Length: 189
Image (cartoon, rainbow, N blue to C red; front, side, top):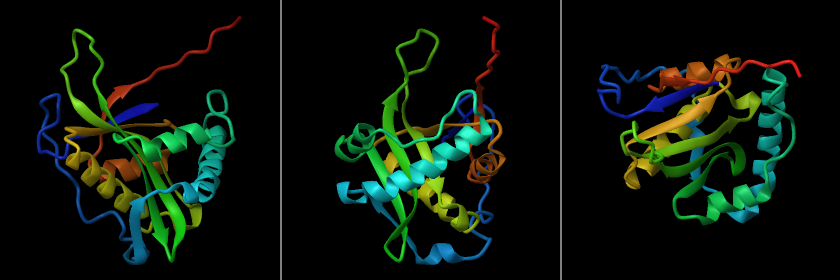
């Protein structure tokens, strides 16, 4: 799994300069124009669960050792809706939920070598398969960044499966950079 970092600034946290790439996301169809983003409400959870089922099935397909198909825990979703430093943003087209972003404001852990930062972690981002490539993921990321900025977050962070090349391309187009890499080795029992 790769961990991605977006600072929204010209300077990356490790001191290397980077550029935000603009104008590439959403160029595949223009259907984003009739898409709006709003916070989820409890009444939306069934549609969100359908998207989570799709997301988890895809993750299980890409990494069957670590991931399994299923639904997200309802307590997790309710927490995103109710807790002040969490949010579940929905992308809607004609009042149909076509995507979501699950967000939480966090603090870096009190580990001696880490600089203290307030940041926004993106737990999950999903768009209906038939709606991908139309700028909806980009729109969700921009709204997530706006939400995080309003809450004093210094950067965005997320994890993505190595095998999920489509998601990695989206994040790279939106200015997210590799910050850490998780390595795994299975051991014989």
